[in-house]
Length: 152
Image 1 (spheres, helix red, strand yellow):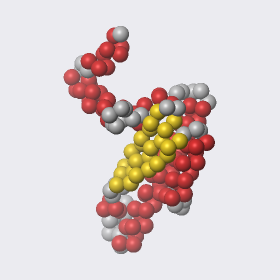
Image 2 (cartoon, helix red, strand yellow):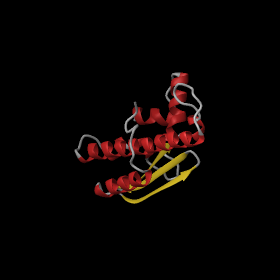
Image 3 (cartoon, helix red, strand yellow):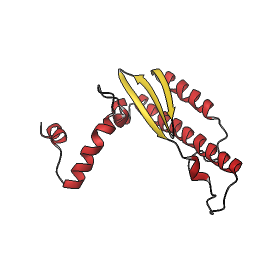
């Protein structure tokens, strides 16, 4: 069962919890955007811009129960809302864990949020690097951008 699968905490409260958590650890410029089945949380911290994309479930995924029984429209809506609440609570958990690890000196902000760091062109490190990683695994060769960092 996923973390917070039975949570009753409204998404609005979780968003407030995330904003308060980020402020506690020194972040500023917090904001979020929702569009379709995606939500984006963004903040500034230690001179870095961080964006975390949260894929939200589709309401169509809840037309049936886990045992394949058809749900009523109200039951489908309820199951979908529960799944959305769960995802937001899981996001809060991961942000909390990452920030605590940074605060405790276990790791760095860049290490914890590397894939989510925003580059000067507006994309994230993860978006920029993912195709290069796929190519490296597919071909067995390191892309030039990655080999230059390891060969000096």
